[in-house]
Image (cartoon, rainbow, N blue to C red; front, side, top):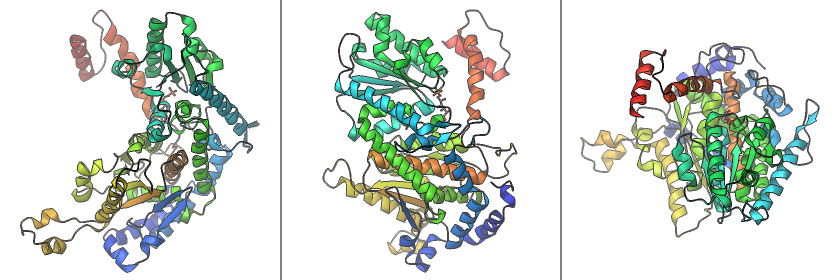
Amino acid sequence: MTSTPLRDRPAWKALEKHYEEIRGVHLRDLFADDPARGERLVAEGAGLYLDFSKNRITDETIRLLLQLAEESGLAERTEAMFRGDRINVSENRSVLHVALRMPKGSALVVDGVDVVATVHEVLDRMASFADRVRSGEWKGHTGKPIRNIVNIGIGGSDLGPVMAYEALRHYTRRDLTFRFVSNVDSTDFAEATQDLAADETLFIVSSKTFTTLETMTNAHTARAWALAALGDEAAIAKHFVAVSTNAEEVTTFGIDTNNMFGFWDWVGGRYSMDSAIGLSTMLAIGSDAFHELLAGFHAMDEHFRTTPLERNLPALMGLLSVWYADFFGAQTSGVMPYSHYLKRFPAYLQQLTMESNGKHVTLDGRAVDYETGAVYWGEPGTNGQHSFYQLIHQGTKLIPVDLIGFGKTLNPIRDHHDILMSNVFAQAEALAFGKTEEEVRAEGTAEDVVPHRVFEGNRPTNVILAEKLTPHTLGALVALYEHSVFAQGTVWGINSFDQWGVELGKVLATRIIPELESKSEPELAHDSSTNALIRRYRALR
Ligand code: G6Q
């Protein structure tokens, strides 16, 4: 891996020069000069088709970005990750979410342990548990089968499960109700459980550490809620299971470790939806479909590991993100899935991308002198088109956008799907080519309105197409972004796998809780604003 600072790498210097040539070039001209561009600047892998032709790049840009990847050691670092090296240096951990989806029978030995075998042991236990619940063999305390499943978890122990449940709803058992409680706001728990019968409800307490304040608060509330209805401690074993790496805390909580599904410190929270954290997903779609999801992840892993970078989807997308963040100064990036089932995908991606690459120091602790991870955001198309797309089309900011669409809908009704997909293509076209003053005038527009109706264009998009939203496709799509994030982090030389930035607020909140709850007026030693806010809250509560 290179230790040359990013700005000193030859490819970076060349890109700086090259940017000066490209910044004024319009996509209209790039397409006019190269009629085959839209068929040429595409890549395919793991069932996904990526059209990256509507980016502000030339063949030279790609060549330089690939050179940058090489000078940044992307290939070596990818191998290091797949080998189980401790590339998460600030936590001294391997980063092996890729092992979670390696097929049964393959092997990856890390520190003398075949992690693939241990992964499949847990997957098999999850499958037999899921089968028992889904078949009704697993009975609640009063002898009734489980009809409701409530996942309690937050961050990486929530966003993946929620997103996957929504994304794969078509494949879920409709006679089972799934709810997800994450927020320590009691409203979340209250609303999620208000219409559920405790004797038909199973809680999955999902927490890698089993110490997270929000999750443990909700888990204890759930315990009290179940006990109030069922009146017997013995009921807990039938109505609570845990997903965690911390057997001791799970036992202390009162959950039988036979009903605990483990994972490992080499699985980061935001990279864990395909570990036991996906238990709710498996309960919803069944173990066969869950294995298809894993196969989709694995197909993209293999694509990423083995495909030359110029045809490598995650590498190309990652490098393009670097191009816009560091050369065009783009601060944000949009992700717009044209599938209503993917409505939580942008929220999921926000954690994956921003917790991973929202870093200001390099692996060896030096402050960066370039931009790192962009702000990710998005909503399902076409809804976004009727709200914020205005700013993307005609605002003053450059916002690269990923548009995700499918060839087939899972709910064929009249011509909805063609209408939906026409919008994917129309948006990408409008963003790239815009509408010139002459074109607006030619429509007979009044002269004073002309400037308002001009679309500058030259707004970059990636269009990602797949045949159909299936568990396999979802796995491939998530892995695509995981590895794109990795490629970006590698170029930036940052640690995409720690998240120290979430710690400070947690520590401060723990100090403030007693100040809010104390019966007597607490002595406050914060800044004047925090002191005044706490006093105001105490008066209001
Ligand atoms: C993800 C983060 C974070 C984590 C939550 C929940 O990468 O580490 O979002 O998933 O803080 O942690 P627990 O699973 O330990 O409760």
